[in-house]
Length: 350
Image (tube, rainbow, N blue to C red; front, side, top):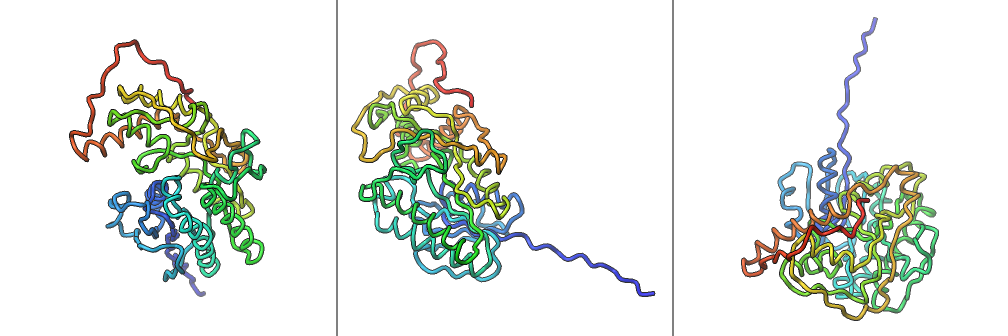
């Protein structure tokens, strides 16, 4: 009788490439995937990403950082199972600084990552944006809405660049059989945002902590829907690991809609700042309303945001308070306690 012994083979940890992994969202994704036992390759040219975001990971045995611009051809040895395409500046202040470079990142960068995915047999997720809907004429915005984008405006390098990236993803899927996922990300906030990126939450918090006027563009009645970064990262991973038949596009965002002025006043409440509101002209093509329909994510991924806006804001304020305190003691204002009763929150607990 022949005795056959089954020798267990060691399973290789999945290897994940995150383009834009040193950025705000990408660095949180690096953290989460490493905690799940993945090997992570972080690719970033540090245009808006920061080494500080990934510094705690640099000595991790399963983490590797490569400084590289996705506009250039990407060559990485070894197996790659998953690719997250997050490499692109996401705030107008930064993507308008080099609009041609932004478009190149969206188009050439996406092609290079798709070529790498095709060569490695990897699944690839494109971080698209709610900006593909432009200044929407349909509210709230479902994935079926084709958008209202100005192709020659100052925001077009990003808006149209992301629309082109989605086109490339689906063309590679149709012509090469590449496994793709497309996430349309709505406004996201949380620790590790850049303090100078010009986005609503970071702007308001930094101005309040420094005792500067809170700048509101327009009348403050325009709306946004803010998703905490932890919720978004969870949604990205659920989409990436969903069945191959689920390609997207898939909205990921918090459907709780609030006005810009309400956010500003809430930040003033939580920081106990004496800053005043200052209203300025609304930038060209700035969308008036933003609210995602997340039925697709809820039905196919079992995903909904969990972090209430007030909790996320307080965590983000604490992060920026530490950063500003580290800059110089003179930048930390005496946060004047206004003589009044307990403030009533303008935000729901959703």
